[in-house]
Length: 206
Image (cartoon, rainbow, N blue to C red; front, side, top):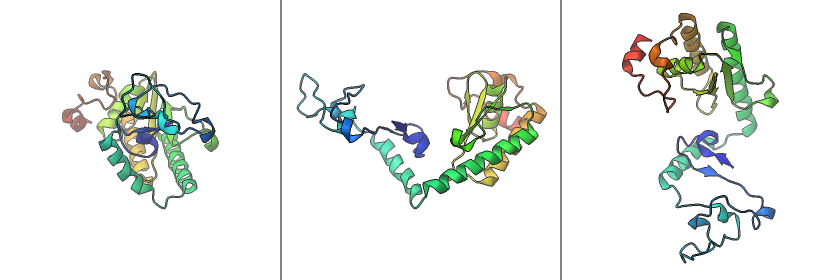
């Protein structure tokens, strides 16, 4: 199973997907017995009878708006070779790692260095990781935070290139060198990581 939001760039709320090998499709039991996975969804039986194939994994009504966004997102993949995409993502991540390590000694790499051991995300550790990430977001460098101290950024070579990576490095370097993360409003924890309460006044001061 996987997430089209992250791996196919459909955006927040993008539908998830699941693959069941054909040899298991008649035996696999869905975790949720939704009406769209029923053998006869419009009969409205009192008892659940799973569909015979992988369609038994369906749960509810398909999310039409999210599927439309996914359909548009898939257009960007036309003619893209996955090996080229992977090589490009690793090169961008390597660029970011080298730049941050050269200019931000207070950050410690948490991501494996070996290409075979990592994907297209890079994580650094810092005790004030949350505030640092909020300062980055306020400067339009969008990453995320993972407790207790992980700053994580993803590299999507379909949309980002060396210039964007250099910009992120420059922004992070300035935040660390000038201590721009050390502000009470950036340390206040919010349920949503995009920190909507950090408004234009904070951005202007940064």
